[in-house]
Length: 534
Image (cartoon, rainbow, N blue to C red; front, side):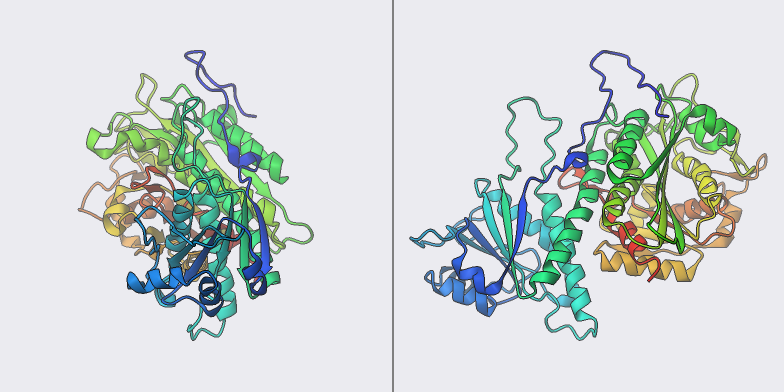
């Protein structure tokens, strides 16, 4: 059970506000044939295109004076990804001068070449364009075949998945997070959109894609809200309560282990990290069970550090300690995936969603550098650095996951700054000793339009973790560099025979530009579940 929320002052929140758990998106959707475009009576039409306008769009524009086509020619529009045509000013639409009751505004958004197509860039650009005119209530979206000119024999499937990713991004980006704004505060990023119409040549296929996009977007939105919540709001207790809400909403089994249950399982690594905080450890385990026969079992494990001070190896100011609320981005991705998968209801696959929620704080009870602690598989760990705490919580979570007799384990964690140094903020790093699993994870990430790069997994780096007084150290005791790799090698010590992959999302879990969580990882995990038995 979820333990009571400790309170130091009466204003401490007892629950986390989560609009994503209550259907935050109030926008209604419809799908119409291309032939109905000319009779559209809404406020605005957004044409997604590469280069010149598609024939239907050009005809629609010509009937209204050809103003958009003229603007495209004048601006030398080449359809580059994310390019928004704004003829009057960088932050306005071009008024159509159409005197009837049709659209007042027309807009064009580029998608780039199919080889370099990025659904996130395109979807974000469309959403940004819609937000600029925040009084629009009814908008139409024209999306042509995004795989036109693609030699891929599975182009229709590719198009459907890319379209879904674009729609997911639009839906998520239109949801501004205003939960912590004061009463009466106006957020310029808010959208007044009430209705979105999609014009397409494939109505039935687009309806299927749109339905899936809405469900996955709900999971991404939840993950973002969890990451965005400040650490005094998203505590171990409120995170566990949020998990209970996700389970109740989606019909998932829910188990929350408190300190006594974790002690009974011998989770010494996890409990050592958690004991310095006033907030109790909350080990979260949700389970999705499919109707009928289960052919495959997956376990998704997310790092759940609600706040990471670094412990006694405290973080310096230049390490952005104020952003360490995002250190539960892995848990957020796993819970977001749980929400989406529960809604999508994939057949034949059972999925376990696990997170050892904790807070790494400094107090008289905190674990210390030099301590020797024992994981639930019996291995002893010397604490070389208290700021390498995420791998310690994951260690016991991975042991727990493997005991469920699953076929595959994938963990997602904001684990190392070293991975950011290697790949930047746009890419996550994939580590796995299993080539078959690694290839499948990469394919799922590609299909879902999340940037993922396979990094080397180097077993011989295990020697760098040697300890003179324990089985291993939680950080490298010799050598230089390779911190993301040695972290992955450390995690492998707690997975025996089950195929396992580790995704380090320290870079893409947080967007510095918008200063908010991204929900990275939800799409890839959902795709893994959907494709598990195909």
